[in-house]
Image (cartoon, rainbow, N blue to C red; front, side, top):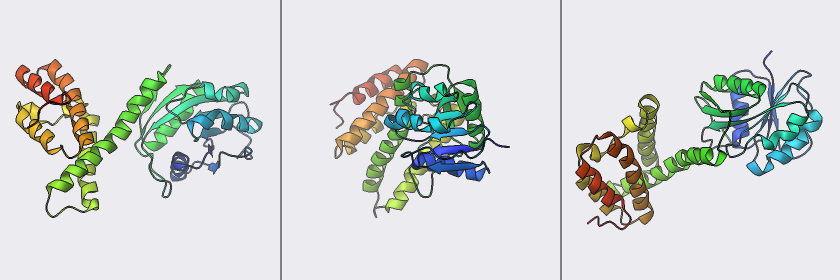
Length: 277
């Protein structure tokens, strides 16, 4: 019999895990994080998935103690927090782990999907085994860590999750002002999402460095300068473009794909306050 899940917290991520369980006939139940722990789904071992805010993990974990049994697994889902938040559950005989889904879940109803998501886990062997089962159900990849620099790790995840949104916002502003008649919001969503999906697919199969598409690969800095000039109406978009430009220049300068003079000119354009006219 599949080990049942008890999902603690019915926010966006909690509901996504319940949807994953339903899709694969995993016995599961969910309950709000506030209040006493619920009755167990069975006498045998269970997986408790603590899907609450970072600040609430320790408190909520302590409310589970009356219901925990040796052999249970307790997982929290916070990328910025480690195993210390679950120490009380470990003291009760449960295996503990920090399982972070590398997925942006934006909706509550309908619940977001974890299909294809990668996960990172740190924890006890039984917790890692449960995490492997979860990643398998999602059809994703599991990264197993023996130690985690939480601030650095979470910054990397946040850079992609928030950065992609910021890029789409800036791109929609540029595209919407470039076309006549002005595209609908739905068309702009489709256009920016199409680009992001194609980039993500390339990164998955080729890696980030080989996925770059840029005028710089043609030693064309004039186009880059024109890009910056039309962004004068929104300094935040221009600053974002410059930050992206500065970062992609790192591998380009290292691997010699473009001429040194192109790198030098592009670096000037990437500097704050560089003349773009």
